[in-house]
Image (tube, rainbow, N blue to C red; front, side, top):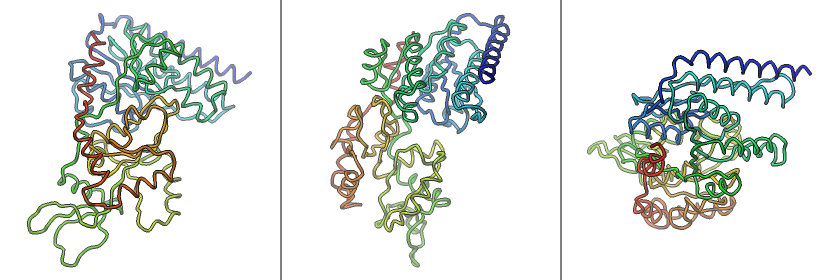
Length: 431
């Protein structure tokens, strides 16, 4: 009874907050909000590259953008430097540790709803609100209410389904998962336009949710490209200051130049070259390195393995250094598995932008991105991955074999970049 009373009080507080915001803004509503767009995500903006890309594309076409979300990590420098993009922070809610878990979850959703709605009613009136889903609970319903208030159009960018992500922790038949599924389908139908990341998701949205969407594939930004050798060396030397694997294995007594584990500068000519004995550099696409909450746990497991010929590094890179490292690597390894089987790993998109071949773990619609034996390899278990790595690096660092062939294919494919793809797909929707 006490828990129910607490939830009721929170709901009353939410209604009061909405009415207050409504009265406060009534006299300030500008006519139409033409030229303004709110790009929103109930998550960390710094780790939401696709939404940052949306904001930059809108700004490039003369739109004023309110980029709304959590400011936990720094967004890309292009976003921060844009005179048309204004960051609108939403306070990240720490977990409530009082009462049953269901009560904690309800309280969190209610408080997030109030925070998000308040933030959306404080901005200048937008003509469109572009929302990332997931997370969609409570974001979709709140954004729909904000659109009613502002007389704006709602665009949902479907990256995945929130209920399938939730099912990883609770199971598909859990009541909360079923409620989230019902909620997502119901409020998803209230949008004016919908974007999605794969053709498989486009079909699923139509067949199972009666939602018509346009596929906007993730595409690499222009700064994802092969890194020139001089920039590679500069990056390696920077990382060597903090991370052991980037330091040279041995130092020759007669060597007078600058050296990393992968590159060296000739002391007499000043030219950078790749070290003859350099190791292969693999980049793994995961969610538990960098500043991830399980970083220490996995580092503990790694340290127990006592590899002789392998070093594992879990650095946190600035947004500007990440594409440089991808453009310097020899192979990408993707461990992303979709909760719905309908989304694609954006990190592989970035790797392909850098002409970096990949080995990626199989799931249903991966073929829309990774072409087996053309731009990389698809594996199903650790044994198959091990065999692929052995085959690809058998003659390393010789420039021949499958690895070199994959890179040549990526260079030749001339794939669309984000700006061109966005202009063709999204810009016509905005009128």
